[in-house]
Image 1 (cartoon, rainbow, N blue to C red):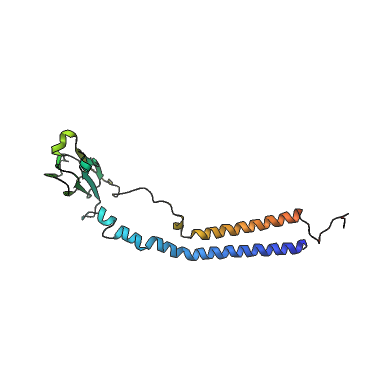
Image 2: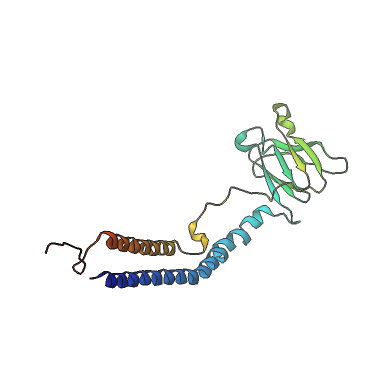
Length: 220
């Protein structure tokens, strides 16, 4: 094979590789909308965020604000968990009893606010909620265990609460890019094939020799 024929062959291989890459890219583009629709509109997300048992029912109060939970005496410990809650006006705090002989007795309330707490001493299974509309700091104690430091507070301020629940960023999933990961592999392999073809061609043109090439004083 002479150099002209070899160049034609190499050009044909490169063209075929480029065509394969274009086909892979076209297939990826066709699959992307379907994958995005499946990832963003599937029943899994809809049930998790909008169903009766999902975040909506767990975090939203009847008045449209966010609900924050405080555990009363978790595991028998003489504490409120968390001891301090920062919320926005219109948010609701729900206290849930986890052990016996606790109540909620306000010790400091903003002047224009009204809050009587939950004076009855109760045990596990008790649940009390209150929606706070007036900004300020509400401090309270468990009267039977005030001497042990069982106290808490609710801070109501504009922009407080942060949406209730929050959480760390979701783990990155390459499939959420909208193109299947295997299509990326196809594209990368195509470009590698093209570069390998040109590299092999350059090597043969510079160092290779065929039966149709000769040089002066060549011994037969």
